[in-house]
Each structure stands twice: as structure tokens, then as C-alpha cells.
Amino acid sequence: MTLSNPFSRPLVYKCCILGASLDQFAIAEGSTSSKMTAHGKTGNTSQSKVSTKRASSPRRVEVVIPANSSREITLEFRPRAIRITQAVLLVVGQRKGPKAGPTMVFQLSGRPSAVTTTDCIQFAADCYEANERNCPIRNPLNSGGQFSVKLVEGEEDLSEAIMRLRGLGSQPPNDTDLEPPRSASKGRLRAFTCLTPEIHLPDSVSMPEAAAPPKSAEGVQILFLPFAVKEYQACLLFSNLEAGDFVVRLTGQAKPPKPMILPLRSESEGAETGKEAPESSMRIAPNLAAGEFKNNFTTIVVID
Image (cartoon, rainbow, N blue to C red; front, side, top):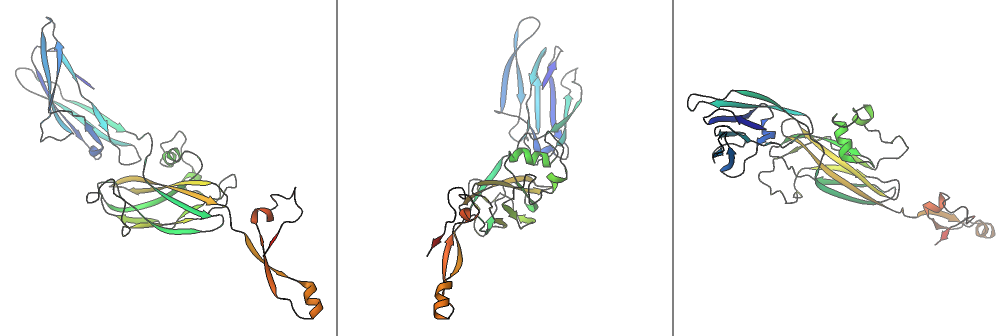
């Protein structure tokens, strides 16, 4: 935004951000002071200055504007929650000489445009084989607390799916988005299940940002059960009303299923001896048993 001074004397403004979500907005500041050249009516040059004291907050700055000039200040939005947040920018003119700038109030509204993940947890399992494990979670936020856990799975862009879930997408959320069924509309079964509805996480002050979460950290119980040989993706959405939101990505690799073992009994041997024949076994690959190659073969078995 631009602050102008049409008078022949300098003006001083104090800018501050107020409101419940003030920590998600900031007035950008570079060095301790930055200067620009402004041309007055007579063509002479003068210096304008933005005074940002070292002890000041990025949400409180003092702007000094020379006579007949203007100054731009930059506002930053740093969302920590996947929702629309609001604050107020208060610009108060300070009297220095006979003239004082007006007091102005601006409504600030911030809306996140996309979702990024903080960590990625990888799974691998054979088809129809369950892989369940406890996954330690690192909280990247500055505040800890009790977080609710929401699982979002799909083949589409998961960032857009989470935005729609919070009512920020191009389409409003519906009942299907709020409570995803175990089976998708096209009959595709979901592979991931979160068995932990909520979890208590400490803040990230004591843990470096690049450090991996320790094994002793609080974790969520995740079940990965694939029903097709392909790659799966999902996200865990952790939400706390005070601390904010963060997202952890899940990826799953499904391998071909193991062959099934079926008992095989020789009837001819039993008829000759009058005793029941010992059982042996045979392996039938599930994809063959399902008829994947029925056009080329009548019966395919592998006998041990």
C-alpha cells in the first residue's frame, strides 16, 4: 500500500496490526532503515525514510514521509491455518509540526491458496496384505496441544481436496467431502485408514525444523491395505483451533499378491489303497485364478 504526503512538511505515521489473527500478518521490513528519492514541486530532491527500530515488531513500524512525496509499505500474509483469517491495519498520523496525518483503518483478510506438506511417510505392502504401524509425528507449528486427525485420500490433487474440505475450493464441500466413504463413487476401495482420531503434540521450539521425529514421539496408527497393484496417496490433516493446521503426506506402494496355497487330494491313490490319501498342495496365482489369462489357457496351476 502507498502512503502519500501532499503537504510541504514531513508526516509521520505509526502502523500496527491488531486482531485475533494478527500473528498471521506482518509489515515487511528489510534493513533498519531504507531510503528513497522523491521529487517535490520545485524539482529538488529529498529523502524519505521508513524507520523500523530494531526493538519493534514486524507488526508495528513507523513511517516518515518527506514533504510532497509518497512511500510504499508491504504487507505479508503468513497463514498457519487452512481457513480465512482477518485482522486490522491501523495507521495513525503523528504530529510533528503544525500538520498531522489522518488516522486510517484497513480491514485485512487472508485466504490460503494452496496446502503444502511438512513430512512424507511411505508404506509398502503386498496386495490384500495389511500393513499397520505407528507413525511418529513432528509438529512444525510454534504451539502445541490436542490435534484432531483427518485422513484425505484420492487420486486427484490432494491440496485442492483439502481446500474444498475447508470450504476454500472452487466448489463448496458436501457430505461426501466431510465424511469420505470407504468406497469411492467409481467402486475404488480406499487403501489407507487412520486409527487415531486425535493426538497431543508438543510445539516445535525444542526440535530443529530439519530433524526427523524421534521414535519415542507421539504417533498415529495407520493401516495400509491395498486392493490393486498401483501407487496410493493420502494426507493426514492435523488441526488445532489455537495452534493452526499442518499436513503430512502418505504414499503407498502395492506389490503383486502372493500365490494362494490350496490342498490337493489324490482320489485314485485313495481308491487303490482304501485309505485316505495324504494331502499335498498346489499354488494358484490370484491373477490367474481371477481369469486374467483365461483367453490363452484353460487351466493353469503350479503343483508343489
